[in-house]
Amino acid sequence: MIKVMQYGEGNFLRTFVDAYFDTLNEEGGNYSVNIVKPITFGTLERFEKQNNQYHIVLRGVAEGSAVEKVRKINVLDKVIDPFANTDEYMALAVDDELKIIVSNTTEAGICYNGADTMDGFETVTYPAKLTKFLYARFQAGKKGVYLMPVELIDNNADELKKCVGKYIELWNLPQEFKKWNDEENFYCNTLVDRIVSGYPRDEQTKAHLEELLGEKDELVSIGEPFGLWAVENKGNIADYIKEGVHNIEVVLTNDIGYYKKRKVRVLNGSHTNLVPAGLVLGATTVYDCMNDKKLSAFLSNALKEEIIPFVSNDIKATTAFADSVKERFMNPYLNHQLISIALNSISKWRARVLPSFKDYYNANKKIPTYLTIGFSYLMYLYSKIEKSGDKYIAKVGGKELEMKDDLPYLEYFANKNTVGAFMANVDVWGEDLTKYAGFYDAVNANMHKIVQGENLL
Image (cartoon, rainbow, N blue to C red; front, side, top):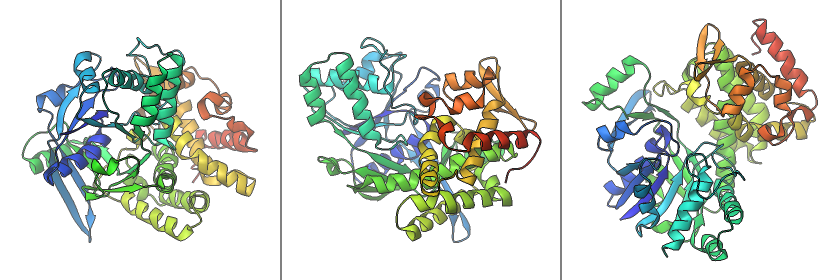
């Protein structure tokens, strides 16, 4: 048995990673996935009710016809709440069959906090939790594991290892443990690519899927047929991760940087730049945006002028990938909600859009037009945030949008602090965004136009 520990129970991991391991089992493998709930929020009631089983539906268009592929996922062994059942969680740390740890804690999840303590748990970061978990494994004399984070940051595994190293130093853990972590554990950078819209929101789609499945499934998740998982080839990872197409295509590579940069900038970056504009202008889904002439042109212009030229020297290959991305965005069956993509927009903009912004600025000595417009809509959206009970709502175009992001950002705007100071906050962006000549002035002017009802596109 090859056991996988998975930090995160969200739609993406269940429609991507778990679908992969489930397919390997169908092909003769022997895998089990143990999900660990990473935060206190939410319950695991749906998993318990359905005996850890659920369906995914991959919906797309092939040769002009609708395609819906249903797969029942049976690979989940346990779904653990470590806050309520610490013993069950820590039992994995000393399990000889544990070989792989996968995580998806959003771009903001791989971070270090010097205030985290060794005896803390609920409030400490994921890397802090992981350090404690690995230390227990080391103390039990067990072998290392393969760590495959899928968070969309550059060199995600390298950054995770750096954080673990800082906690080893902060907590004065033994040098023998540091040596074990360095030599026994393989931190493999990864790149994932599949658009997942998750659980359907509208009643019509829910009813259709229930008829399609023949049963009600409160965990059903919708994704696109396309799937790519590029994984850094380290150690003997090929013994556990099989290349080829197994529901998703898996590539073991020594050049993860190419796949990462292409996907994060072209697909994720264009998504992140598009979403605020789409929300402010009344769109609900990515498909809505692609069928709006102005929003679709905005996406294409940003890709052509400000993103594609800075991905690689092979403009033709990157353009071909961008064209395939636009085709995927046109998939009417995904029902990919803009408000879902807007989750943690601040850290997403920093990771997905800022690198393209900087490359354009450095090459042309001026700010990029379309990425600046996208950022202007983002700041306008956040400037509309108000606190309503325990929620943060942005009232835009007659709609109330629930905004979900790091609490300090939501509170900052709910308290009506200025956009300029937020742009200048190095802790938020990693640098002062107002240092880019003309950027703040352009954002400020654009926001005034939006307030007056102008369409910047």
